[in-house]
Figure 1 (cartoon, one colour):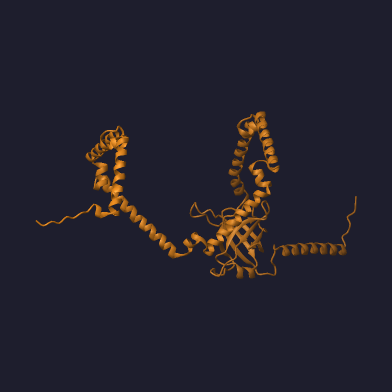
Figure 2 (spheres, rainbow, N blue to C red):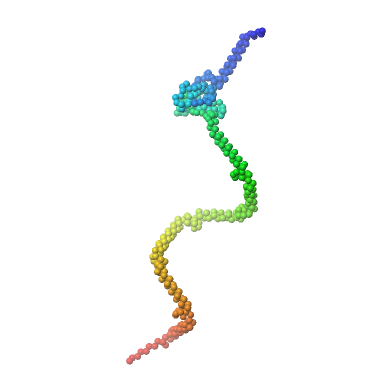
Amino acid sequence: MATRKKVTLADLKVGILVLASLAFLIFMILTASGGIALFEEEFIVKARVAEVDGLIPGNEVRLAGYRIGNVKEVRFAPELPDRPEDPNTIEIIMRVDPTVARERIRSDSVVTLGSIGLLGDKVVEITPGTKHGAPIQSGAYLRSTPGTNIRKIISGVDPLIADLADTAEQIKRLVAGINEGQGTLGKLIRDPKLYQDIDRTVLEAQELVRRIREGEGTIGKLITDPTLYTDLKRTLTRLEQLTRDLREGQGTIARLIREPELYEKLNHTMTRLDEITARVDVIAARIERGEGTIGRLINDPTLHEETKATITNIKNITERMDNGEGTFGALLHDRQLYNNLNALSSELVRLIYDFRQNPGRFLRIKVSLF
């Protein structure tokens, strides 16, 4: 039978020292992590939420993202809610830094549950208070707002996933239709004739570009012919000179634009033309009503018939004269009558000449007394 080893006083001292060291180490770790506040004043802040979604004691408490304490306890509220629409049945008790709490946490601060990353540990976020909020005392309750948890994120992603599934199904049907040669893209992929047409079009476009580069056609000459460029530049220079002349007041158009007197004269002339046009309209209206000689001539059928009869008589007289009838007809067609008149005219000329030379020969006065 084995004999028991006798524990000496030295061994007992060593064991006590090891246990004390382990206890002190654990104490220091908890103190450093905030689990135990031995030498600090304990400042408690409370809030009620609908759900904690995995929040446990020891999780961090942050003020605007800065760590100020940790969660001391998570428990159900002592009393049941008065109304079904009041879902805040979970109470969170937080231990925070007294100095920060008195300076930065006010009655208008808000508690929100968050997480470190998408799937990290839960944290309690507190918004800093404002000047309008009153300082809080230890054990005070803060207002809370619902936080975003993974279940809400997943529930919000569900419609997006459904839309993506519908889109994927539509893309699948579209690809199947293209593989079957449906639509323009399907024909482009599977119809060799369409490919040949496109290839022919590309070749013709290349040929057109080649001809343009070689200076063929109007576009080719426009690009490669320096003369055309020079003419175009000269035209632009003339246009610039014309614009400059207009700005400087040279020429008729420029004077018309810049000189008000010429504009007034032109305006006066146009006014006179309008007045003349109005008078012409009045005259035309009177003619249409049959007033005046021209109006009666145009609108009176009797005057028209008389004029027509007069023209007919003149035509008959002219025809008779052409036929040699009457005195004027004989004068026009009878040569003997023309000769007689010519001889008579010659005799009258000689008689007048003799009378001028010797008027006493023709004028004799005889006076006698009975």
